[in-house]
Amino acid sequence: MAVSISAALLLLIVVTLMVRNGGLKPAHAVACVLLGFYLADSSLAPTIQDLTSKTAQLIAQAHF
Image (cartoon, helix red, strand yellow):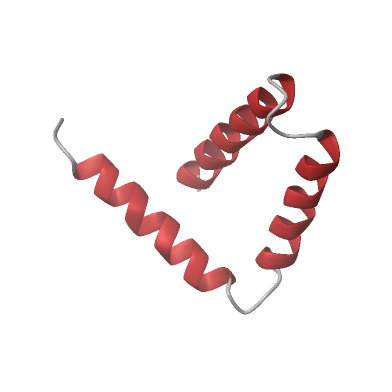
């Protein structure tokens, strides 16, 4: 659960920066949010969650 909250916070910060710097218009950000809600309710949700979880584990195990 903590990973998903951290990922959501990170994505919120990225989107906010992109909107402020002009790289992403507010309408585009809304479309991205809606897409996220629809993906969360689709049959792809478990696959996306597994991929995100495994990527987070890989990053946590990486030694830089």
